[in-house]
Length: 147
Image (cartoon, rainbow, N blue to C red; front, side, top):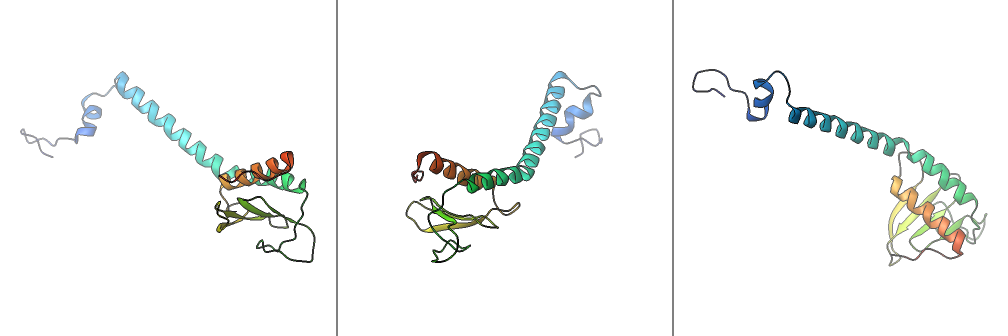
């Protein structure tokens, strides 16, 4: 952009920075707010990325305390032989095995998603929801109501 005097003009969003070498209080607060927001965003990303492994360990502990009454294969289909390892919790069908899996269902009972509880393959929300449903079932002796 060229001004009337022939000098190159800076864009409007940089005009405050170029005009005064020392920042005003408003600029300092804006810069500090931007820095804090960036630190919080990076911290939340790190927490979401590496916090899932702790949640999966908690899910494994809760799953080991359950009393299973059904036998299922790793895909959640009922079988007639093998150990009892499956629980139907209305909104989830959870299978406890070497790799914990679950089917997330809508309230009508149709499969909505297949979840594998391994790091990097499942969202933290799903791990929390299944853990909460298992804990509810353990404490109240019936499955959590479907919402």
